Image (cartoon, rainbow over all chains, first blue to last red; front, side, top):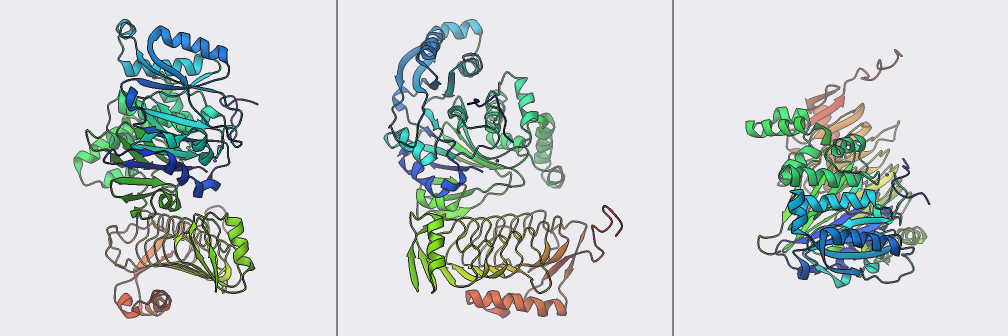
Length: 364
Length: 241
């Protein structure tokens, strides 16, 4: 089979998420169930989840999740990691053998901390160093792929339908304060384990329904800053854009949303608040290459929160509901009703309107 | 009355059960099943609870569907005849390419309600939205009648941004003065005339009956009627014909 990244096939998907504003931890079982009514939005070529707050016992370490094609690759990668990191624990990620998920690669996780001497030599902060390590492994080490690299969070993805992927990865055994989920219908690439969503870098994870038309413009811009798009999928570039804008450039979530789903020039002209007008026009001008066009609805997961965002023309669906301390997000209301049959305040945010939900400070 | 408990039922099976029935169907426990009632010529379907999936009543051809709660995207996609009544809200693209029949929505509609609605001779689709409508209302509307009433206490305006983009046929009626709504150049918005009001009464009457509301209270309000300019806006776009 031609691997993802070597072929482009000229796409529908399903996304869902749940977060507790009080930081109450939930197992991954509900979010897995919530993907069932949206089964027909995917075609079995990818499903995945991201859970936040799932590794409290290692919360100060980066949790690397990796796919390996063989034992030799794993040995080689472990040797590389040990040169630069203190590896506190390395283990196979536990899975269930189920008939619907087959041909899995070797799936491992490592809890690591960059060696202080290495950071000193390179004069880098730990996040930048970790991001560079991920790029280095994913582009330079054949057969190895880092698919999760944040602290106290983890991504779990596979080829299959999402409701089966959740069972495969035993998500009922993890507890997190927020979860995102994705069912894939790949349209531009053949569908490989690494290409399933969420796409992550550090603690940022993105699940995406849509197909952006600005991929190459966005990719070319991002490559100037060392981000290497290895999989030819649009979600990968959206993840890197958000990491660049929020972590590297220091923009707020709202500002980052104002770059990728920028208001129309006509809307900016009509904005009565001068300060807002100047800022919107500044963001559109400075980061014009990071405007994401074409249909998308995404959920960005980050430490302590979630952001849901639609493209400004709203060419994809997204519904939000609430119940007690929880906020529920999904492509379809049916899925929200699984997360909580009594969900209230059901609404569909406008195109380009970011919905940002944060866990109460100190609760995660 | 045939009762169908639809929880965990695949949409194909559910639709088969509906088609087999020779009496009205009452469906409970549905959750996201698509295409409910697709193409049905006759019969009555009531969705007593749950949330029907996308494309409810697609290609509907004479049957009637009643939904107690909300519906998702693309309600009545390309429906040809019959009626769909929704007591809650609908998602995006309600009445997508609708070509006949009626849709009444008591609550709000998402983006692109009435996109590509069309009409031919006696086939004139009508969709009435009781609450407000999202952006791109009546996008590329080619025919039929789209009515938005803006009833109830609303946080958002009666219609979102860019209504009537690409409209080139049919009629949009809004129960408001619409002074601040920006319409595109190729359409004309005017206050309803007496003649218009006679026509509006027909649509409102059907809507009020469906939800047991008072017709006159809905009628007592300014109305705006939007139609594409009478000179064919695309006539000379490519060739003079």
